[in-house]
Image (tube, rainbow, N blue to C red; front, side, top):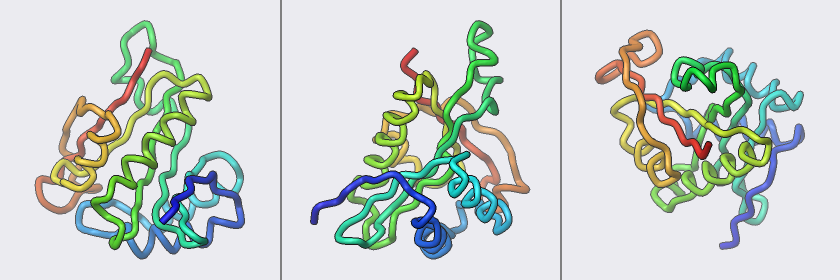
Length: 168
């Protein structure tokens, strides 16, 4: 198995949508249909980005990410207003789970955002999502906040955990 990590192009969006719809849903993930559809449009338009893990033409996993200023509350006063990176989705086919592919994709996305000149990357998850917790830790992310968000996290604790990776 030789896995290639490639940037998504508009022609990949249909396969990416299928991957997210098939392997993304579980009680911990918040995947509103309209939000996912809009996010995929942003990828097609180059406003958001995705990296795909592919083996012999088979899509095994993906991570989507973008530039944002949505995490300023976590930045030090001298860094407020500086653009950050945000990992929107990280999905790995169920038959590929536990092999480190998600962490590899996250590290590749972080390297891309670092090459853009960003100095911080944020990601969030359901507080109790053990698989995402492990993937994020393997990629170097550190938990920085946990808060109630029952509308987005209707299961378990109903809480979101925000993680950050920075190198500034």
